[in-house]
Length: 219
Image (tube, rainbow, N blue to C red; front, side, top):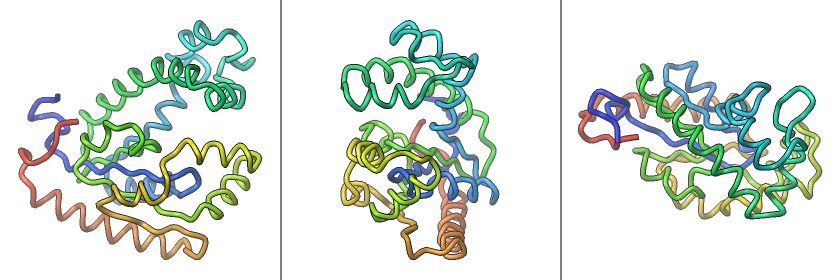
């Protein structure tokens, strides 16, 4: 639990959605408009980049095969391991989660935006993030559009994308946990998405300004 002068004085928004839903794009818009954005995926990528703090422990746990020639995590190889073996997934999470948590807390403590956005792909699945934020915002998208977007940007096979989606909660479960929803389906234009995000941004800024620090949950 953080002190009263820490990010508990900020309104905390948990931003989540399935793979390919558009979380990163929306988060970048919110940052552009003045929110402090903390993206756990980007933190994880930094930890597993060449020279990343997580790489020695990952290589010790999984062997040299987990590391690419440049020293970064071999994501394709690791993806195959963790989706085929729950124990492997648990080993990787045991290494990454404490490091991600520490960096998330450090970034939140330094946040200066009108509110703080935590971008967490598995926010609902984690079982703990929902309790750490004041509001959950879901970027909602139909599965067919998710698959098409991920294929176009990553080249992953449909079966691999479907396995990733299967490891995430169902769309209905995610929506049931949401306080706010931004629709970004196949019929949504960039202008519509921007307008929907801007409406919520303005609402969150107003809410942040109206709530005393003591009403926010500790991060």
